[in-house]
Amino acid sequence: MSKKTLIQLLLVLLVFIILAVIFIKYFYEKKEIKKIDAPKEKISETSKENTNIIKDIKYLSKDNAGNTYLINAKIGEISIDKPDIIFLKNVYAKISIVNSEDIYIKSKFANYNSKNYNTNFYQSIKVEYTNHKIDCEYLDLLFVENIAILHKNIVYKSSETNLLADRMEIDLITKNSKISMNNKKEKIEIVYKEQNGNY
Image 1 (tube, one colour):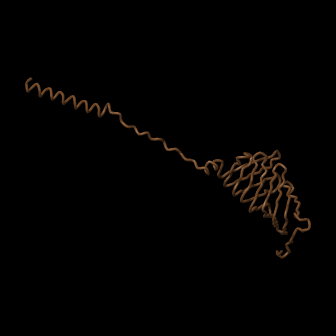
Image 2 (cartoon, rainbow, N blue to C red):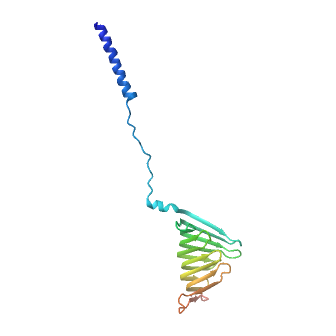
Image 3 (tube, one colour):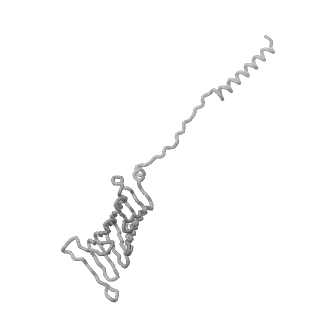
């Protein structure tokens, strides 16, 4: 075999080796594919429990006579056990009775029944209508019956009277009220305003 043929054979062999290396490196070699999982959103137990929280909640109810009941709250939480009950925080309510003055109620908390509109207000309750102001610890509003029942440490103020009692029931239509003490032996404390403006 001549020297020239041997060199040609070596060159051809070298070309095949280079081609084989290129083929193996770029076309045949199995590339390691890293599996990247999409990040799983972790939901903590507290956020699972709080999925029923609603911010800036507002309900408007109207009866057949045209009386309306508007209730607003900064936060509302739907009860898991009783879905008709909504726990409200920082509550403001307005009761508009046909041919009568509006009644305004503010409280720290309330339980609102979305089925019958009954509402149990509690803590730091303030009720206002015309020149009447009432503070108490609990207020049960029975919208369908048009009755508000106030409980515990009631302080009633008007332009002529200051009054302290344990229980007050107000007819929302007529504004007539029944006032009583839990202990029958205790008396309702009433202070009348004098002509000079002092109590």
